[in-house]
Length: 140
Image 1 (cartoon, rainbow, N blue to C red):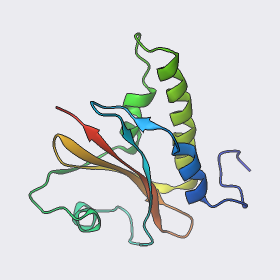
Image 2: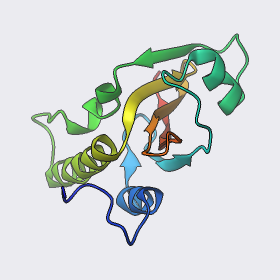
Image 3: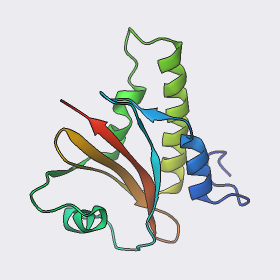
């Protein structure tokens, strides 16, 4: 069994929660990351209409679907100005990425909003339930 895969003594949600504890998603305002544990087993892909319903946004709010890997790009793409702090944060986020990728299928990255963007990385667990991460990204 892969080390990243869920160990039987802890659920995936518990492991994911522990892996993001204390991590902040960098943007113009560093924000906490929350774990999503939707009990819905809607078929993939998680379309924008259903997404709007789940997060409670109106049709006037911009929603975009991006390749799931883009969620991690700003955190894992090293810049020349990075200090040890940013490098250590990237190591921690790489572990989160591997945990998500090893335990969820049909991964999707959905974003709602324009400046204050609700960002969701979701996928289906072995039972077909939607799990993942949520954070706020500020882009001015």
